[in-house]
Image (cartoon, rainbow, N blue to C red; front, side, top):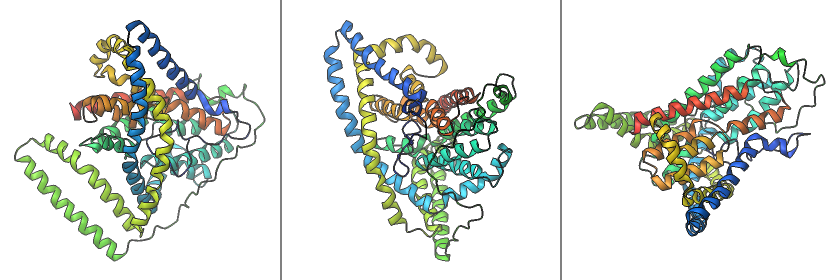
Length: 471
C-alpha cells in the first residue's frame, strides 16, 4: 500500500503499495484495479478531447486543464495544515494505547469468525491489529499487519494457491472495513471550507457497518456452494508450496501486555473534562429544544460538537496512557508534509482529467442519460463518477471527491454524499490483487463477489443515510 508510517488514512489501498514479494512481477503487483484505472483515466482524457472537437469547446478544455493542475497544488497546500494536525492526533491516540485496546476488544469476536486459526497463531494477532487499525482510521498501520496476516494464513493453507475460508473472510472484512473515524475525508472537508466537516461520521459508520456485515453474510452463504467450495479447487491447484514471500515484520503486541495505568492526576483531569463537557452539552441541548425540534437539535449538536469532542478524546487517550501529548502530536504532524508531497501527482492527473471531461460537455451528456434513472434511486448523476471510481482507486476517488466538492460545495447534499462514499468502502480490486499477490493466491473463490456486494450495500446505505441526515 504505502510507506508504513507516513500516509493519509483516507488514501487507501490503491496507494499503499508494498514491495513486490519474491517472484511477484510488477504487473501482478499492479493488479486489476491499476489496469482498470489506467483505462478509465485514458478514456476520460481522450473522450474529452473528441467531444470538445465536435462541440467547439477546445478553448475551454485547454483552460480547464491548466486551471485544474494549478488547483490541485493549491488544494494540497490548503490540506497540509489540517492533515498534519489530524495525523498528530492519531499519533497521540496510538501512543496512548488506543490501537491495543481496540485489538483486545476484537479478540473474542475474531475467535468465533476464524475458528480454523489457532488463537495463539501469528495470523490471528496480525488480523486483529489490521482490523483495529482500520477501525480507528490508522490505514497506514493496517497495511503491514494485513500483509503479514495473509502470509501467515497461507502457512495454514493445505493447498497453496487457493484461498481458504479464513483468507476470503479476512479480505471481505478488510475491503469493507468499518470506519469509526474517517479522518482523511474530514480533513479534506475542513480544508474545503466546510462548516460541519465531521457531519459525515455517523452516515459513514452506518454505511461501512452495512458493507462489512453484507460481505461477511455473503461469504458464509457462498463458501459451501459447489462452485465456490474449497475442495472443488483442489484438483486444479499445484501440489508444491511456494516459499512464503518476505514481508516486513510489524510489531504485534502480546495478548497479555499490560497498558500503563493512568496516574491519579491524569484520572482527575480526565474526569473533570468529561464532567465539564457533559454539563455544557446538556445546557446546549436544553437551549436548543426551546426553539427547535429534537431531531434538529441532534443534527446541530452533532455537526458542531463532534469534531471538538473527537479532538479532546484523542488527547485524553494520550493523557491516560502517560504520553507526552505535545511531543507525540508534533511527531505525528511531521507526516503531514510527506503525505502532501505524495498525493500531489495523484490529484493533478485525476483533477485535470475530470476538469477536461466536464469542460468538454461530455459530463453533461452522461448526466442527461443517467439522471432520469439515478435520480429516482436518490443518487444525483453528479455523484456517479465517485461511486464508480471508489472501488478502483483511493487516490482517484479522492481527487474526484475534491473536484466535486469544489464545484458544488462541501456542505451541499452532493458534497456530503461523495464525502460519505469516500469513507464507505475500500479499493476492492486493488486490495484483492495486492493481498492475494502477497500470499501467492491465484484462485480467490468468492472473495470478489463478497467484496463487491459489500460495496453495493455500503453505497446504498450511504445514499439513504445522507438523505436522512442532509436533506
